[in-house]
Image (cartoon, rainbow over all chains, first blue to last red):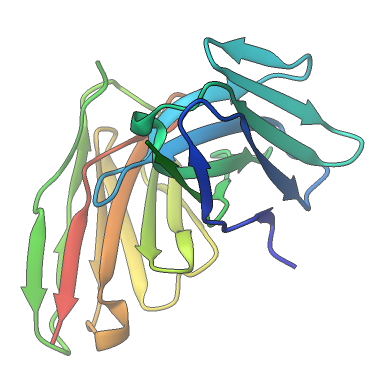
Length: 111
Length: 113
C-alpha cells in the first residue's frame, strides 16, 4: 500500500462547479499535512496547510480526519485558472520530517 | 521570499557518467530534500537532510548519494548514470518547524543517453 494515496482523476468540471479531492495516508504517526498545486512543467507550490480543525482560504477548504487518516480539499466556484494537478502531502515525525507526496489529482476546468 | 536554486534547468549526460545536481537555498533552512518526478509515479523522495553532514534515505535511494557540507547547499550525486535515471529532479527546503511547508526549486530535467 502506498503511504499517500489520491484519486488520479482527471476531474473535468465546468466553470463555477464545486469539486472535492480526497487523500488517504497510511502512517498514523504523521504530523503535518498540506495541499500543493502543480502546473504543467512547473514545480509544486504550496496551496494550503491542513489543520485538525479544518481551514479555509477563499474558495478552498481543507479538512483532516485523523481517525480515518483522510484529508480532503474542496474547491468552490471553480475557475479556469484552477486547472492543475493537486498534490496531497504528508509529513512524518522524526529527524528531518520525511515528507511524502501523493501522485496527484489532475483537474481540468472548462468554460 | 524563499529562493531555492537548482544549478541546471536541463542536463544531458551519457550512461556511466558521474552526475552532480546542485541545489542552494537562501533562507537558512535546516531541512533539504531531493525528489524525482516521473509521469504516473508522482514525486518520490530520494534523500533528505536535516542538518549539515546529516542525511536520511528516502524511498528510492538506490543509485544516488548526497552531500551536505554547508547548510545552504545540498547536492545529489548519480555515481554512474543509467537511462532509468532520466527524470525531473526537484530540490526543496523547509525550516526545522514541523508544520513548515516545502519550498521547491524549479527543477532539473536530466536525460541520460
